Image (tube, rainbow over all chains, first blue to last red):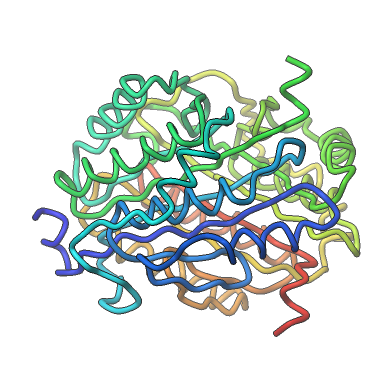
Length: 199
Length: 199
């Protein structure tokens, strides 16, 4: 696989941060971290984020589970997600690889993940001249997924349900895995923003 | 300049988002946007962020002003900043260029910006094989700036004062301007995290 060419490491990861804009934000974050099923990924929480590492479908499953579990109908919640694979400086450890692309949160995501979200994201890939072509392809995949991509300064905006959005992240990570050696998705997902009411 | 080679556009920009973890978060964001001096940059606020575009020193000045103005001694505040220059898809407009690298918020940043912050960040550059070497140089500059860089999965952690951190961002953007055609800094800055008390 092309993705193994750089350093032989076949680990995808996500660095996920939650920002619930409410007084008892810590409780909301910690409860979501606790109830998300992480049986298919390596995990570690630090000052900024919870990091999940493993197979790409399992990593997206954990990230989607975390966001869906933190969601409620009133809190303005923002999630910041850095998906990455293939950094030449990455290490071989800190992962959980079964070859099965397990998705233990799939049922929860399907059940709870049909609320509307807005997303800003950028796709980055490195060490190649045709990176803009690959970025354009990734955005085309968003249109095909019904996520209505809109160009903005320094990112692309997407609109859809949470389940639809994370499914798209799984699709582009699978595409990138087959075509690129090192890539990053920087995505910020927002729900219940009061700014929506002004528009 | 190398940075103009790709598309002839010499505009740096930042997409800045504030996440104050409190019930009246919107007021805190809007007040900070309002009091920050944006006389030296083009600006636009959308659902996610406020975007500033212009000369790199002016753009960092506006971003630092925004964060320092939003800070108080108790709120857990997170700021997400995407600094970028040289994207081949960027447009020539939406900017304010005087050739003077004006920093109208410098006095406020100096006066109010001596509080301790934690940062996670990544530096990305595109279309070149030696991108890891450039990333290493950028991290070395953080050590030289006294920001105690620590490697983590998918980012580097920094610790210092707000003023010190944003000064470093100005330094690396100036370095990148001289050496690279397209680059991005993705930085998340945190103050008053309750997780700090547990460590």
